[in-house]
Image 1: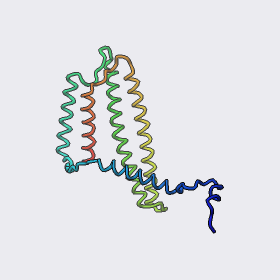
Image 2: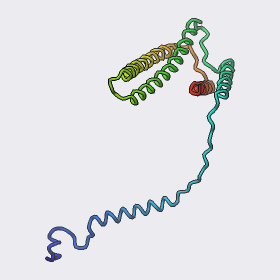
Image 3: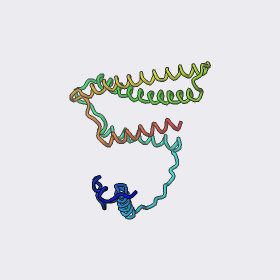
Image 4: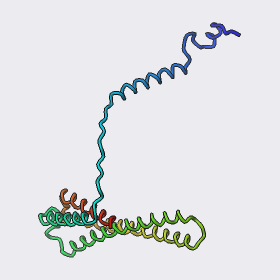
Length: 197
């Protein structure tokens, strides 16, 4: 059976138009070829990666001591946090105690989170049975999760107290950028020293 051109025209299909799939494929091919042309102009250079040996515990301890000395020097030159002349010594001491407590709580939180992670991994290895060891691990996971939550709450509370103390006009002048950078370097070195020991 042959279809006449008049029958095709009656259905609304033009006589000499290519099928829609062919035009779609053609435009995709052209797009791919143009993309290939653009990619051929990209140039890269290979660089050899250098292996950096992990610092030894002695080297890290020396770097921590040097960072402490540099911080003390910056503080003696007035680049650290300074307090207003009319501030009471007890207020300053309380502020410093709160800052020290915050740092201690943050270190404890890291320890608790690490313990929780390790305990969860151990629980996964043991499985979910009803053995005595499995019950002990589940209890340890629950206790560690509680400790992490309590530590986070304590950090929030002490942090809020410190923020309120800092908001008192003329109480504390923030350290300059060099001091902040050196302090961050010291904290990073201390974390590295804790992980290697």
